[in-house]
Amino acid sequence: MNLKKVTAVTLAAATALSLAACGSSSSGTSTAASSAAADTEAASSEAASSEAASSEAATSEASESSDASASGDITWDSVTLGETGTDLNVEIKLLTHRTDMMADDYAGKNWNAYLEEFNKMYPGITVNIEAITDYANDSLLRLQAGGWGDIMMIPAVDKADLPTYFISYGDSDTLGKEVNYINNFVYQGQAYGIPSTANANGIVYNKKVFEEAGITELPKTPDEFIADLQKIKDNTDAIPLYTNYAAGWTMGAWDAYISGTATGDPDYMNYKMIHTANPFAKNADDENTYPYAVYKILYDAVANGLIEDDYTTTDWEGCKGMINNGEIGCMVLGSWAVTQMQGAGPNADDIGYMPFPITVNGKQYASAGPDYNFGISAEVSDDEKLASMIFVKWFTLDSGFSYNEGGLPIAADDTNSPDLYQPFTDAGVEYVADNPAPDDEADLPNEMNSESELAVNAGGNEKVQSIVEHAFNGDEDFDSIMDEWNQKWSDAQDSLGVEIKY
Image 1 (tube, one colour):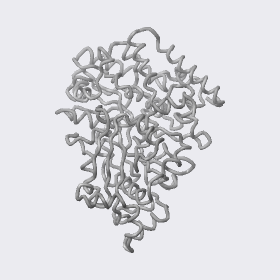
Image 2 (cartoon, one colour):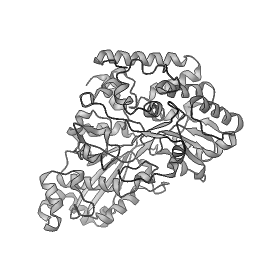
Image 3 (spheres, helix red, strand yellow):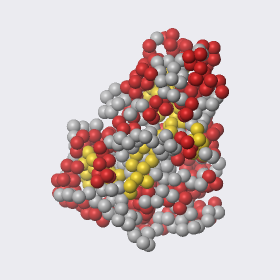
Image 4 (cartoon, one colour):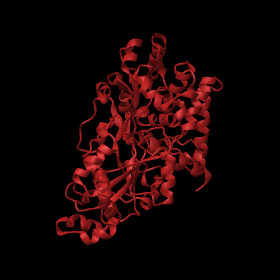
């Protein structure tokens, strides 16, 4: 693996849409255990030796779970919640990025509350939670080192490496009929990840600020959006657009808007863009669409003084209370952020979520896709794999987590979406999920990101931060920045022998 690839993978975000929810900004890790672990010391001792005990303690009543463990044929379909594995007495570890959910005063439902509910059905499965702050980097290092635990939110790895690290949940065609948004971690027809939740791309905004600014209709084009930001600056004391520049990952998150949101095309991100000459150039048919338009919104907002006074001092944790209290007009973040902003102060009803202001041929679209995906370790015991499969399936189907966090439904038969998506419904927005790259090009998007060093939708924070810097300083025009990106992309295509088709 060359240096470019190491750097790109290390910086990569966990999802193809860069929509992953962020937890607390505190450093280090936090841990929590399910209530079963605290019941008695004996239970903990028994769990520690579960692999040896499970093969001897299985009863005919639990033959379904025992057969699954013994054969190693542990898949999504092999688990029936409330029946499979009810005899298990085992301890497993989950690595997560959601450090915020470790807190007792978390505004939503915290980890302990979910684990308590899980243990009502499975009292013998102890789930230990380890929350990691710098998850994108640290989880990848832990994965490569081994011995990290049983379940993790899958970091950015090459698809060809998925079978090395994780077990398959089953055939992707079959699983896709039961679970939405599984495409990110499908390899050779097998699904290796289950989404924890799913998000749509849009903009978190303060409805009261917009009203005070005199904005009566939500913007549908870049020009309308910039004009509305100007109204906020002229008529209120709020910061029109808060960049969250200093956090870094919040800048790379802009990449998530260049695919379905800006094109309406599910094949754009993982196929057409790879084979497109100069994908960051102005679209000849409509300059207010495609990647050019997304990044130009940011450039124009900064150049026109419609952001914070000092972008280097932005504060991720502080911005939550600021938008709740009407000090910020809007922020470009995935739908996962809405509940966090609502819970950061007394004005939850003032927080809304609107479609991104790009219209393609008269219609608005929203990229929709998974947050971090659960992956189950391939190196743990069969009982631990089974317990992990049970927990992931329960968390997906029974916990209500995705809805609670403002996410789109993960279960295919679930039609219950949070009210925050009403503006999308009112505007007739169509959700677009990125299709995976063809099997023979499964790793080509990663290779292009590595070779170009642009890390599009894979933790490429610095390139988007550079837009803010140049727009603020006025030392480079927007088209020149896009020309530089196009050159890097073109050089990578040449280096990798990518055929130009568009």
